[in-house]
Figure 1 (cartoon, one colour):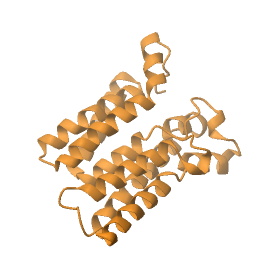
Figure 2 (tube, rainbow, N blue to C red):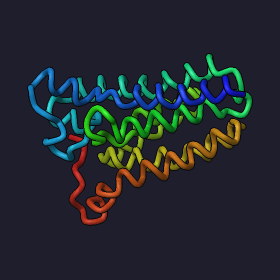
Figure 3 (cartoon, rainbow, N blue to C red):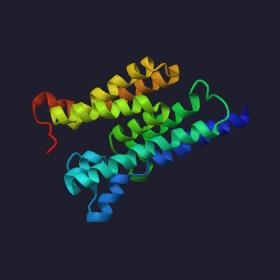
Figure 4 (tube, one colour):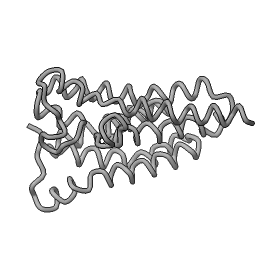
Length: 202
């Protein structure tokens, strides 16, 4: 039992630290010398990176953040010996990594909105659901021209899709809580959408 608690504690700490790696900040700093937190929305995520470096780096950061989300979940699945049948360790890793991305210890707890890293965690938990979420995000973002709308709708659908794919209940609950958290992180975007001031994808 003590060994299990050590494993769980290490899972949470490692996942949070991996989530805290500020990929967008590092790339923008290396390419321009600027602090991305002082640009646009102030987020370190892919959408804000696009404002500075363009589409190529938008996709680069998005993929890196998705990998960053998936990695701790995969490691937890492979190395934590108990609780894997109900999905406890992978879910705790997923929670820790999206909190790390949005509240990174390396940047005074000011990060991104955890969309790409959140999708990465879902891909690692259930690849079919993860691919569907990514496809829904892409279609809605393309048709509405709003990244925030695509992100919010796709992630709100994630718990339903997890349920339909008969995933463990822990995965369904994680997706529900994660969706609520990410909607909360998009509260300013929602205000701008309602007022007609949200930036469209160019």
